[in-house]
Amino acid sequence: MRHPTEGVLRRLVDEPAGVSDADRAHVATCPSCLRALDDARADAELVGAALTSAGTGTVDTDAAWARFSAAPATPASTPAFRPAPAAARNRWRTAVRRPAVAALGATVLLTGAGVAAANDWLPIFQAERVDPVQVTSADLVQIPDLSAYGDLQITREPEPEEVADAAAAQERTGLEVPEVGELPEGVTGDPTYQAAGLVEATFTFSADKAAQAAAAEGEVLPPSPAGLDGSTLRIQAGPGVAAMWAQPTGVPTLVVARVGAPTVASSGVPFETVRDHLLSLPGLPDGVAQQLRSLSADAGTLPLPVPAELVTSSTADVDGTEATVLTSRNGLFAGVVWVEDGVMTGVAGTLSADELLSVARGLR
Image (cartoon, rainbow, N blue to C red; front, side):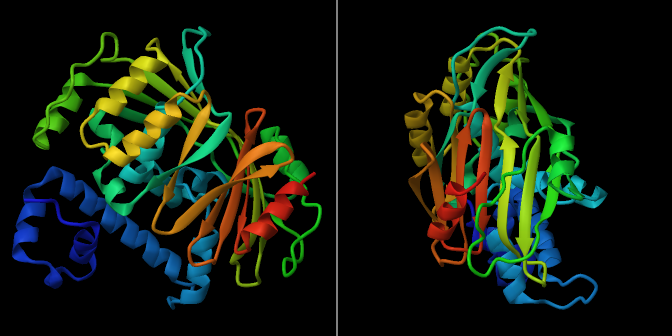
C-alpha cells in the first residue's frame, strides 16, 4: 500500500474522523508515516501558537499570514534572527531533526569545494553562492531524516537576542549590520536589531543504524564506503545580525540580515565519498537527486530548498554578485539572497521583488 499523503496525515491531527480505516491502519504500523505524523503534530502546534495573538487567545488571520509570509524561507535561518526563550530553543532542537530541515542539511553535504587538511578536520565545503533546488511537499515527506543514518548532535546554539542598536549587534558578532540607503515606500521608522552567535552541529555516520532504518522501509542500502562508518561531519554557520522594520502590529515589513555562510568539515572522509554515498541512499526523490547531481560539480554552491508550489526563483545582479530572487506565487512576499566573501546577505519582506532588489543594491 502506498504511504498516505501529507494531507491525510494532517487530517489525522485536525480531523481524525475524516481518515479512512485503511489509512489509519497503515500509519499505525509504518515507522516512516509515524515520524511524519509527529512532524504534522508539531507543525500544528507551531501554527496554532503563531495564529494566536499574544495575551488575547484570538486569531488575527491577516496578521498571522503576513508573519508567515515575511519569515525567512529556510528553517535553519529562523533561530538566527528571532529571540529564543527556552521553549523556542527546544522547538528548534526538534526542528533540525525534521525531514524539511534534514533535507537542507543533506543538500549542504552534497555540494562543496576542494579539500585541505587543518586541525585534524578536512574542510569539504564552504558556501560561495546559493542556487535554488525545487522541492515539493511530497519530496519533503519522502526525504529521509538524517538521524536515521547516524547521530545528529547540536554542539553549539546561536542564542539569538534583541540588541539595542547596530553597534551592539556588531560588537557581539563581528559582523556589520547592512545599512539601508533608502527605505521603500511604506516602510518607516527605526528598525529593531537581532544578533546571534555561531551554530554548530555534528553528524556521525552509523552503518548499522542506517541499515536498520532502510530495512524498516523494505529497502537495502548500498555498501558503505571504507572509512565512512563512524566518521563525523561538522556543520557550522553564523554568527548573524539582522535589522527589522515592522508594522505597529509587529508584522515584519522588511528584514535585512547578514550571516556567516555555512561550512562543512569532515573527520577524514573526502567530499566525493560523502556526496556519492548520500546520493545513492534510497528515499531521496529522483528529481531532487538529479538537481543535486547537477549542482555538485559547482564548487561552493549551497543548495537552497524552494517549495515549488509556493515560490518561484530567478537570478539577478547585486553589485556584481549573482543573487537568488525568491517570490511567492501569491505576490505577498519576496526575498533576495547572495553570498560574498564567506558571508550570506538576505533582504526579505512583504514587498515586491523589484523593491527588495532596490534595497539590496543600495546597501552600504
